[in-house]
Length: 306
Ligand SMILES: [Zn+2]
Ligand SMILES: [Zn+2]
Image (tube, rainbow, N blue to C red):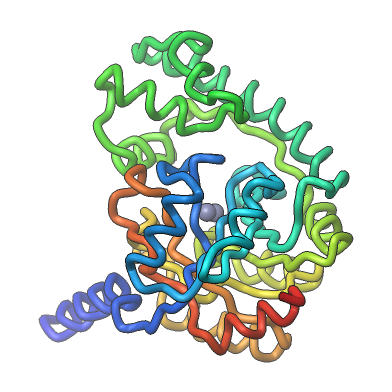
């Protein structure tokens, strides 16, 4: 019995610190103030250099890389891949897809984003109404919308309003509260189809990456990962710090990592990785906590014709 407990304890520790032993040279999954991060793109690049990383990926949610961002990336002394992250398909078991090598001229993605911004706005308005009913008083226009300052309103604007009103004091506590099975405050939403999004990424010569696949529900995970591969994702994020990002260590094990590695190899896919750095929003995730080495990066860069 004791040895079983010890074995489980060691497994949990191994999961938590798996990424401390990885050589990370490129962190391809970072968010900036263009969506829900707290670092500007300039600050992200500065931080990457300060940490000694050899390159970086900026993949903000629901916003295509602008001309300014792309020219900033080009002027950087380290490679900076610009892209986008989009939630797709079933809102109860969301597929997160990253698209690198796309820009604002991609009309297909732009129209997907326009529809999505309206849906997200309505969903967050609904969330604020539900929070009010639960006794957490917020005014959608006066406490939330102004925080977006030109970009689309996102969940973080609601989170910041809740922090300011002292209903919660940190991201993880609030996320756990909203994600709890008996908490029904977050209205459901229809996300765009992964098929349409992947097709739109490819139409511009971009690279589609399945992000943090082990965050998918354990029951349907394998089926959804295989579906994403069938739809044409070019790479899978094999290296990702799940526990630091708030996912329970009990939701994946070594067999899941082995399954993924074998599937990626058998399907001839590229390997990607990144920390999902958001700055101070998710205090447990530092830049470079996960990522890839120069060998994997050069394959991605080659596919993007960089
Ligand atoms: Zn994600
Ligand atoms: Zn992300």
